[in-house]
Length: 352
Image (cartoon, rainbow, N blue to C red; front, top):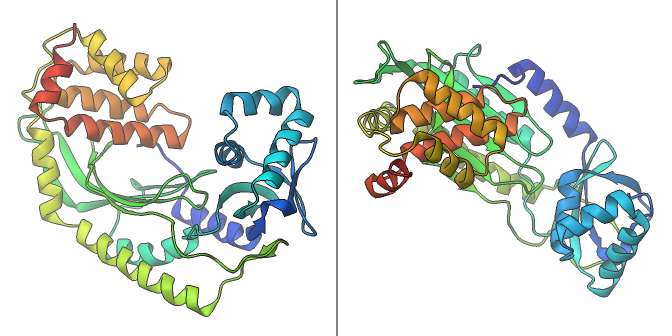
């Protein structure tokens, strides 16, 4: 698995972000995009806009993203005219999430902010109870997501029938969250292979989408959202639920079921053209050309032209990525390859 921050460094960054971030509810009539491509919040300030928020603005205002990006790069004045027209023509309440004086998200006013700090406080004590391997585990916060990938060495076994002698695996658990509308809160088991440090996700997941009731009554001016007692009580119930799911997921039976599923793919051979098979995988998961090339290389180097070998080639490619998000996407894709049923696998494996 791709290495991220140490647990200590992650905690420092999340604490820093807690002190810097602010959320606002605003009617769009109180928002103005400037000729510089920034967002002016009435009586509050002017903010740079992060890529994620630009994408959300384009989607909400129904401006084709390719055209939006072209205006942003080549004609910011024209972009401002477009955006401001739709702000005024179709007024609505929106949540504006900021960090370090930059707009990082443009969301529904009903968006439920499940904060990374609260998630860490709910999950880490439970992970530590189960004696995670801090050195093998990996933690990261990107522009869009938080990842806690914990490995439990006390849950360990060997993949029976593996072409590699001593293919030892351990149980893992990934807890991820987005504060900016880039995905749900997810709790996902995964398998960690010791010989190659690959991580392969199971596609059993608990998800909690960030939706809820309105954050307030209608108003025209910008107002900062402050935590209140009601929200704290509601969130406490959610984090207790998250804790229960985490405890349940760190389980010998779930681990062994995932190991058995992986072992069951070892005899499923690639019967068609392996190059074409990898091309189908590339298109299915929207991998880039470099990733396709690396998957092919690792498949050949591994010498295992099977469903199991293809999964390992994909998850091994995750370790080569410079971007933590892309690495995680490859680890999830490896799990989806393992999950292919007989009909789906036969169709893929016989590609010519």
